[in-house]
Length: 129
Image (cartoon, rainbow, N blue to C red; front, top):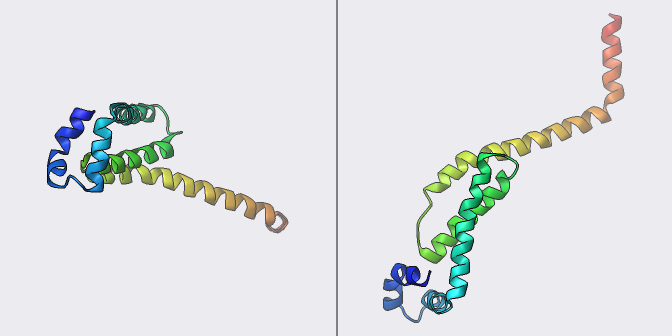
């Protein structure tokens, strides 16, 4: 990972050697274990998406992992994945719609419980006529 960081940020390290970002990258280059752990976590976060092929149960967690991956990759490696945000919007809104649907179902359930006597009276009046 250290070699990747050097190759990716050589211009930053040479042009602005005293900036906080260059200092942070230099810290990661010198501490190879920490940079390898970050690299391993990024790779594992990519492999986690295999779960999305088999179930929708973890969609919210996958969206959070995806946004975190994009943000940290932009911060650490300066790779622009913002075109993938459109993909997230296409995949993320069905999850949000399901959540709204559940809230609506819960509200409807409580409304029906609260107004049960009124609904029962309407049903019995319909039967008499």
